[in-house]
Image (cartoon, rainbow, N blue to C red; front, side, top):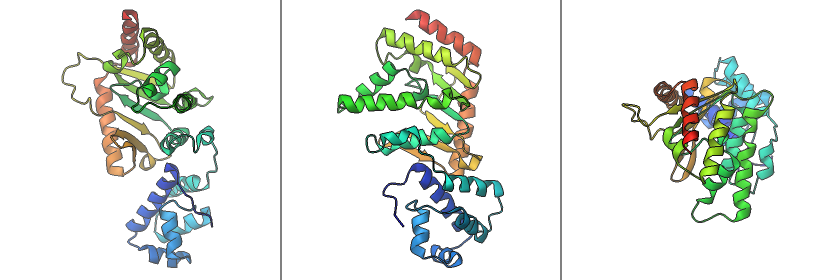
Length: 283
């Protein structure tokens, strides 16, 4: 069996969930291997995402682990048997794997949420805005690499533009709307883009204004993607060492609560559109 050199985040997530099920059952990897009739090495490879697992073996493992959650098992089977080769595969070896993992995550998400304080969310960015963001990197990216990143970010929008789009909600601080990442023309075009997409039934944009009293959550930027079940949701945070995917149930619950808190502090969608209109007039 050929081992995966670099499992995708989705493949790793499946592996993590299978390991959690085994540990919850109080079984060692060696014991699980004996129940399945395979080597402990094979269980390790499955639980680290280095090799796949068939539907038959997955359901057998779930039975041995006494998992009675049929909806959860079915969701894991769907992850294990998925053979999607999405548009992001054309960027493999050309962009860091985190770019591909994010696109794949969005493709499968049942809904998407963003909270941003300093930048317009990637799914709402115009080409000029994205190019300005990537151009600010130090050391500077070669022009070819920069354009690859811009093109990839523009293609990510398919999830909110396809015939059956993913429900999307963004909470954006006024700071992100006022900072001129590019020039005045680019800023005006970016605001117009946000206003345009916010009219869609499946897209909700909310704004947190500067003059809001008692708002201390400006460090809580996040991206949240809904899974087939809440326990399969994924949150993403950017840090000094790059982006990190978060999937523990306790942390996911905290992120959901945090989003509700930030959302409740924002303007409603209609007032948010009026607010953005006013900002555009000032440019």
